[in-house]
Amino acid sequence: MTKLKQKTRKIVMKRFKITGTGKVLRRSPYMRHLRRKKSKKLIRRYRHYVEVTGRIATKIKQMLHL
Image: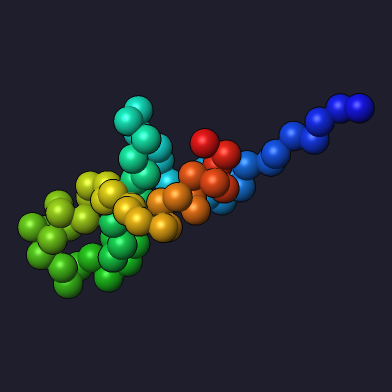
């Protein structure tokens, strides 16, 4: 009898990034549209990844089967 394989959630794979040490990263919000109003300083700050912590990070890892 063969064992069933777990499928990864593709949308989670696209939206989140896992580092080598196991941290979960996500993109900053507010970067999609209406950027003309925002200061250049804010836009530079939003360019970087932000770490996801707590229960949500563990849920994301479960969806990715890590």
